[in-house]
Image (cartoon, rainbow, N blue to C red; front, side, top):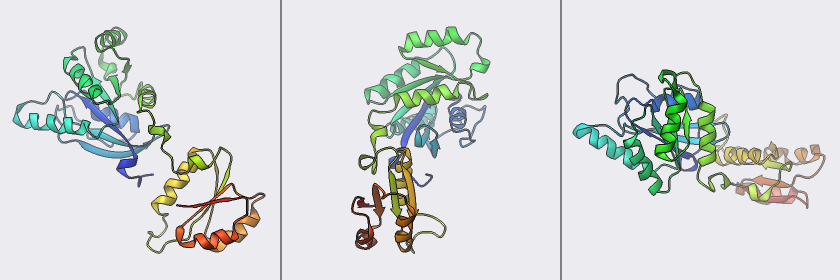
Length: 266
């Protein structure tokens, strides 16, 4: 899924003050060190994009932004870049680490005015005395649930992931390639002639995306090349519900397919 285009990924923007632990939160959620972490405020300057796949969410594009409290002439330019990053964001994580959240509140209003779902994260709870009272105070002020997390110790990360799932844009998980043609348990046969233009040892992107879409819909996926089509059909105990093939061999596959099998192309 690393080849999934950016446009097909859920864009998750990370917003907050400098040194609130935004990059650390990305690393904790993805369980990888994909963002540069430093105790020095302002380590992240221009927005940084990183493609990942998270179990239960799917392909994502994280947008690690500069601090919303950046100052000076250069800092103002960085904040402008952060505002532009919001234009590409499907869901926003607003990260705070103390009770001073006036700027975060302004950004929440800014993001929600654009129709962007917002998840508020209280980070660095490993260094906070009285986490629950602070969490309640923030929820009362921001009028939103607050997820308590220690990105450093990877505590509360699953709750943050669940909040992303619950708040993702409506219809985002309804995008499908062939989901409208199949039901869970259906056998789907992929007939995939190996294109000489495809890199050796790899499948082309439409084949990968279709396979993943079928697996997400709980289908049983069987694959073969064109020359093995007859043998594959004989090996199956019943005709596949659907056969998907490349348009270049559509006529050949149509001639061999069982009468009850639907046929379409990648």
